[in-house]
Length: 286
Image (cartoon, rainbow, N blue to C red; front, side):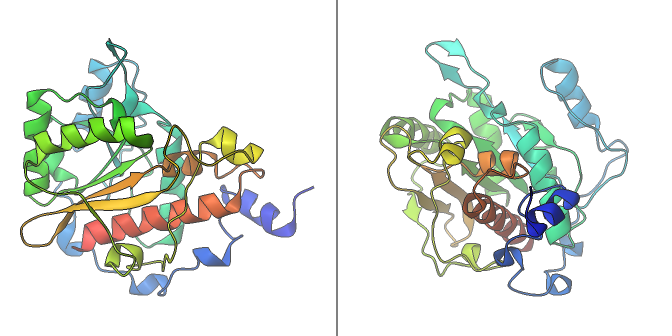
């Protein structure tokens, strides 16, 4: 039998909503930053991008909304390889994680966010329409030169990239190699807990290691490979603007994907939603 708080949360559609007092925002919802100045400039057909990707890759299910929105949770579709074969690592936890995170985002903020997932190729000329970009499993990333150029242009033009769900030293080395192709000469640094990324909407005072769903629900170790300690790192441009947030040795996407399960640990889903909301508020207001 569900507790009253779990029952309430089930009615809202996610296990963590209405359960944890930690999901009450730092500031009232009405005082969230205004996004009017950063509204996406819609074209005649704002969903041509999603449809073209769906047609080109029949394995990508895309739920297309007919209503243009202020914010799209955009996921980078990139080239990846595993043991010398094409590996769609970008699509791990897709589309459920994206959809469930958007349910929370729309309820926890006043942001006019799309209900639908938005996969986008790094080579798409429309990439710059989306100021926020999420990508996963970069330990298997193997970008083409065209993808490298596309992502570099995106970041230099003001785009914001969030990286998630990769573990250990082996995957780190591959990611670091790919990042140096994209942003040569830009160091990767630890982001201190007093940076606005940790307090622009929710106050996050601890970096939590979010395990994959199997380990999280079974009480197993939270780490994978030799990724014992979680970290939030970043890449800044020459003016000090944060361009890339790197969540290493943790899996926020799994927490979004399984947050509605009453047996999924609340500690992990709460942290994952808080961080995800902070990333978006920061990206849309800086």
